[in-house]
Image (cartoon, rainbow, N blue to C red; front, side, top):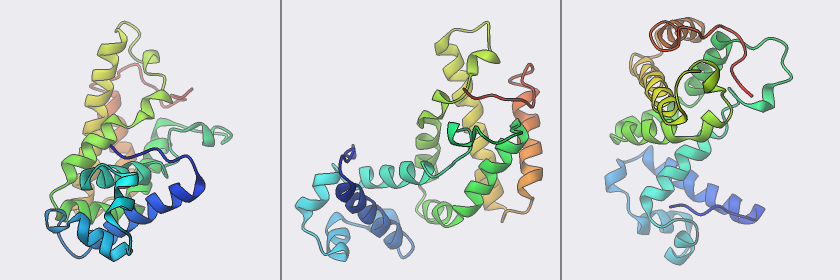
Length: 196
């Protein structure tokens, strides 16, 4: 597990280590990277690394999580915008991942797309979406499973889009994803507000 930093300085240092891991991932596969190499590249003792992370996998998880925290879609931060629809939110989602294509490339190169899917599906985005509005007859556990199922499909769609060289516009991807989510899974879902 990576540590939740409490000071600005520790947050900055943790991100520096994550960014160093990202830079090394541009050069070699994840399995070839050692904590020793990461520490040498950062010019820090191993003890400093373990102040922030329990291991290399935790640094990777933090890199993915903190990258996703930069995503503004489906958040209250954008609640002041006049018109927000499911299609426009999905377009923001695809734009975000297009901008993060370098992260997708290093994760794919190292066979870590599964880690991305797991981290993404378990990311606390569902705290911002009113799932009960679209699944009123289901209990919270069932809603959570359906949401994760739908969201993992969305992530997989985004990964295929990346692997096909972003061959379709973000707008067209959003329209396709909207149809995929709405018709088979959430038939009562409209192109209206879905967040708290």
